[in-house]
Image (cartoon, rainbow, N blue to C red; front, side, top):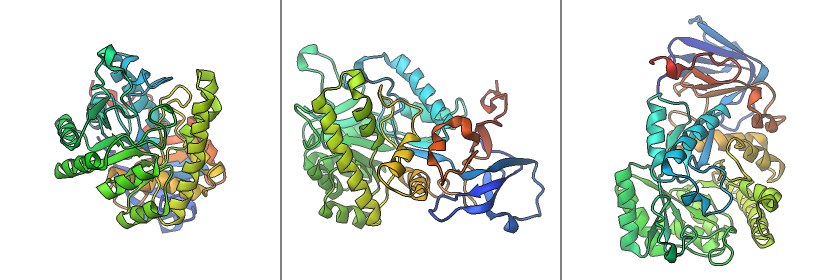
Amino acid sequence: MRTATGTTVIRNGQLIDGNGGPPIVDGVVMINDGRISYAGPLAGMPSERVPETTIDAHGGTILPGLIESHFHPTYFDVAALEDLDIKYPVEYVTLLAAANARLALHCGYTAARSGGSLFNIDVWLKKAIESDLMPGPRLASSGREICGVGGLMDWNPDFRKISMEGLVLLVNGADEARAAVRKLVKDGIEWVKTYPTGDAAAPDANDHHTLCMTFEEMHAVVETAHNHGLKVTGHCRATAGIKNALLAGYDAIEHGTFIDDESIELLLKRNVPCVPALYFEHASIQRGPEFGMSQRVIDGHRETLEGGAESARRILAAGGRLGMGGDYGFAWNPHGDYARELTFFVEYVGLRPLEVLSCATKTGAEILGRQEEIGTLERGKLADVLVVDGDVVANIKILENRSNFIAVMQGGIIKSGRIAKQKSPYDAHL
């Protein structure tokens, strides 16, 4: 991905660097050739360089670009689990994924980690973004997911003779788990996404207290993935599934819904981040009836919401790490609503705005393994910056409306926002 040339200064706003500390009231960010050369108070700004470009934050907020840590680029208008693998052909899903990536960038998300993708579309989506063929967040790919036979993601009955391989690799035993990872290695993914547990969406056979993979299968996934330099994460709601994942050596936990004291101790010992993805549960409860969701399923989501909120509070209070993001692309939880997760963690879960913003920037970069490049506004890092008209600390909800964005920058190049150039930088070579 290209970076800017020359010097740009962003001024006249409060500066949130992403590390969790208080905002700098009269903050400045100086960018030289796409990287941050200074981020701090105006009084300390170097004067040896005269900027070619100055961006006025109009008394608003200057913060790191947001990071979506559980991004499903190929999900679109999903109203039932079956929609994920048979609703649209792969050609159309690819176009939808490109549109979702562009939308995420317009919403201030300059980086994202895929939480699962039809086929290996996200691998090629990343290549297109990195090659400046199209706009989107800096992406970590995961491709197809892994689940035990008969588990949450194995819903097509055998009599239909429909394969699930476009969405998920089904395994039965440790050897098949290893083989599944090796297929993903060939696809070129970075994160292996698994399904150790069920979900409230499938209350009959695979609810949120059900295990969908054995410990042996999970350990085989980790052993094989780590051998190839890949990381492993998993959809973990049931307490036993969380514990199995941590003991097996998982690098991250998705949801961590019903975590117990022993699991928190394991989580902290290995410094494993958790991505709760809680707004999805709230949206399911609020809007589920519009889409024919049964009361039994809604009640399950309510239990998951309360359990997940308590687990998130406990993890953070114990000194653990939380990433922000989750399961957008469902009919009741559409792409473009990403920042509602941040508001929800403040208003419902009870976290402080600066805590949430740090989770959505610094921790997100750590989950991607790119903390040396992005996630905070510090000298030497890529200038992935979000400039917002308004006080984000006083009202985090303003991040939900992208019309409030003055500039969305990647590597110092303005990609979106009010002052984005009329001609897209991606068209320059055409």
